[in-house]
Length: 115
Length: 112
Image 1 (tube, rainbow over the protein chains, first blue to last red):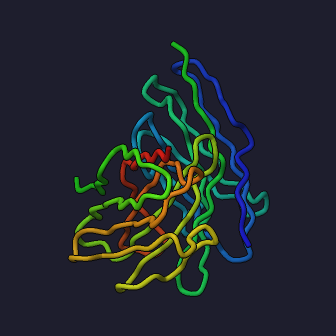
Image 2 (image 1 turned 180 degrees about the horizontal axis):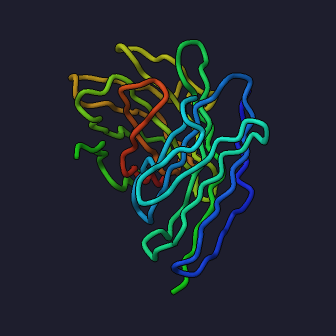
């Protein structure tokens, strides 16, 4: 069994300040972990993924995430927010199940960026 | 950059009608998926498809649903007799690896 908890439904930051979107997971197996972003009326875009290589993963648009096994966390960060970062962000855990990977999505965190 | 495409972007149907949602995955991808997102709720896995057959399906994917890859490029989701609760955004995804998926923009299905 696997689950994902995104600890904040909304995060509000000012442009130019750091972003932290929190994600905790549970999984019976060594999981793959992902962050996706969804802009209004758009599909889900892959930001980054962790698959048991380096624990600090760099993604697109300046985002990165750190896998911390001891804390079962995979928080998403960015040093300086842009207005264009305003979107919904989903943390996803995916572990093997009979040869396939069945992903479980978090509920999403809405990132609001103020000018 | 290649993308997953979905048509239509919005489908309105009457309860009890059949609908077919269409997806064109990225051309060299081998794994195909459908998800749905009911308004205000989580994205939910429906089904995965590999090597011309369903590899996994969720409890949501009951006998009302079916998937097909009719011609090597399209990947379709059919709902035989739509219910009000089928109203949702349906996302198609594809990937070259079993654990990484690239999503289309979604089809918003409204059942009246």
